[in-house]
Length: 48
Image 1: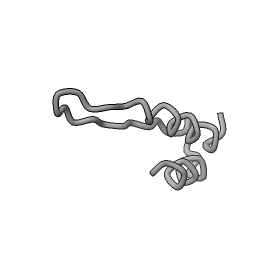
Image 2: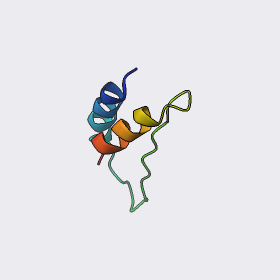
Image 3: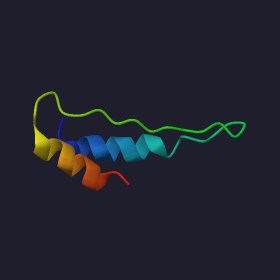
């Protein structure tokens, strides 16, 4: 999966996250399956 596609899916599903009863929400993104620094850099630039 390309980092651009992953970031797009992340943003899409993050819109559905809503805190319940003042619970603190955490968003967690996974990294590349290897030492691909470009993948991580592109992902971090595309996810707010």
